[in-house]
Length: 282
Image 1 (cartoon, one colour):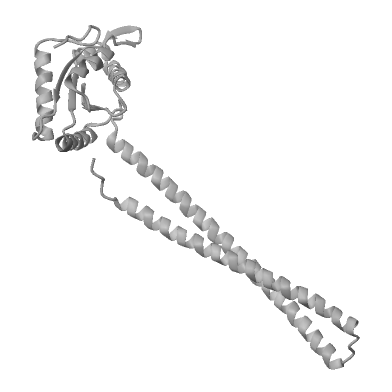
Image 2: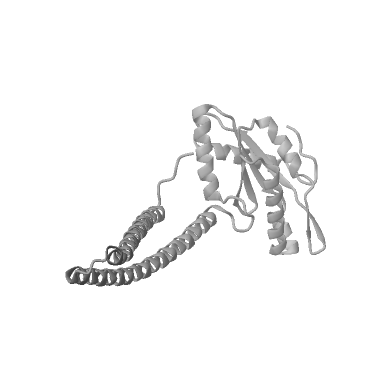
């Protein structure tokens, strides 16, 4: 399957992540610099405390030495006060930047969640939870191209519910929706992980079966039989018509899909109902 082009949202997210990463690296460097400066100040304080003991040990009574020592201590105290003020300011700025980065990450997380939900809504049928027609046709084109390139078998199974209009007329549209949802659930549970079940619209469904020879479709149809929907105490048997074809090299996805539809309509005209009955082997 071809890789989709990068969307503007993805480009925006990548750019924002790079900016946040750069900001985090800058904060790390500032933290490292503050720690290094703190170590230097601690060493200076240690030297200052040690220097205060030298006059007593050496019994130095030179007034100029005492004056210079006092000036040095005062300068060191001023340096410590200045350093503490700067450190407090830097810590406040770092905390503020971290809060801003946290808000940006939260906003990006919400944006990404919305993007995922949007992509899901764009590819999933809202009623049945199956893939929608647009996504199914895209996947069909990709699988047909793969089959064309490598010669792997690809089967398409088209399904259509029988007497679905009568179900809506007799029990109401909520009953019809329930039938569609339960049939879709049964269909989705009957296929393999590599397969794709699609609601093409109305009561029409399509199943893409990569790496599946034609003769294996009978097993799938057997797993769909005996479906009876219980709606408000009414037992509604679900029957369907089916048509399936294998991909022929050189044909377009539209031609491939048209052949599947032709076999489905032929099956429907022949009156072969599957569902509560065992599928007919052909």
